Length: 288
Image (cartoon, rainbow, N blue to C red; front, side):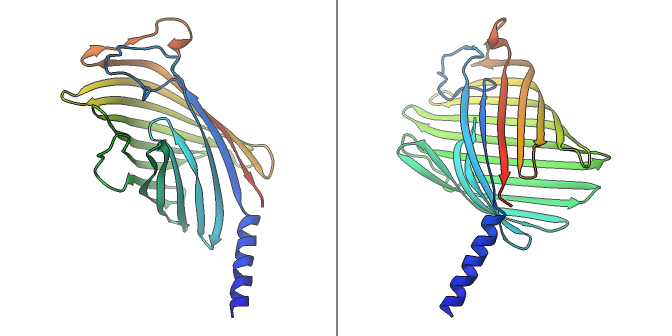
């Protein structure tokens, strides 16, 4: 009996590895409020670049069931690792599993949380999706303690050779500091169009969005630094072979304005700092 179980497990592992998809991406940009920003800062240079790396994998577990895992970087939420089970049918998709804030503070190496996502899809007609991520535990007591939260709500529809979606996204990173708390919050209202053609090795996704970034210093008196931006996003996915896909995702500000403690933030008027952007480049490779 034990021998049969071992053989079955080895066969499942071999099948999973043969269909394994791996990938990595690099993100860098200046379209942000740096977490190192001071409460009395009154300008944005446009050259405070944040950057990070993500690595991820996707492997089938059973019919309609797969495991998605990886180390992910986000300019607002920083680093996290996750392992999500993804169940998909013709009209329904459900993802759930744990995630952990990872090495964002040396005194809190792993910060546990739960991630869930639901997608209801009528193929070729309309779809809706909802995602909610939240750290476990509502209290941050020691210096360096933090909470990560993310929510996404989207509704979309299909037109010939394109998928359109209206979405609302929120992300919050709250940390305890020696003088109180610091909260980094991101909100985006977006309309996107994912353009594709059958039998073509590429697809383009265009996004027009309004983004608000708020860095709050929550102390005896709360001070808010706010950066508002109209953003144009362009994502290009290219299938270079049967196994390799590469992608590039560029967000560029069309116009930005903001305030720090009820005073207008000074933005660069010339030079490289005028252009605020966020660039992600990566690949996915299938072993199948």
